[in-house]
Image (spheres, rainbow, N blue to C red):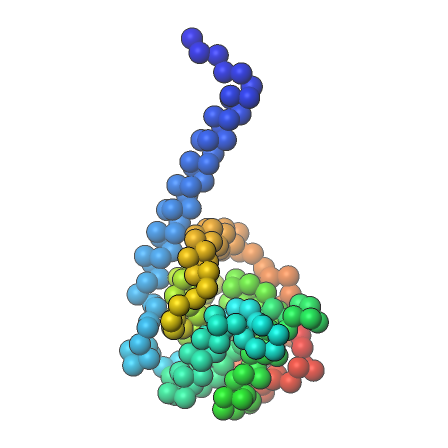
Length: 225
């Protein structure tokens, strides 16, 4: 008869727990990716027309967008110029004075010819779940094209559709990205967390005043919510 010391017993429990967690992460990722893949497009000619495109923040370098963010913005502007979308909702991190993704994002869109009356700003889109939850409840959006890199779109589409949004994804991938293997690896755990958020119906920390997408744009920074 083998007698486990307390240390060995705890180690065994930890190993079993890790195996169970790993299995759950793999299964959830498989489900999320397989259930959303058909809603993701890489061609502007094949993606259906929608009123709104949602662009997610992805880091800035001073007053310039990171490559991840620049490619997302360029993809959204491209869809706008192709009349695939009529309006753009920008959503990102603006929680600190020294870090303001949204001013960089909206200035970039303006400088590249997007009519400011067609640009809406979500100043509390601190993560993908909050962005999509607020898109429906604050901006009264029912359907949209989500614009991001491919690694992120399965999660974004999953969250959006689980929250009652009729969303499609448009890949902004263009060339190589620094750290792309790492963000793809990290995404496995982000997808798992998003499934938990959906299951427990998590509410974002901030909601605020309703800004209907069919109403007047809140482009001005003084309209921060």
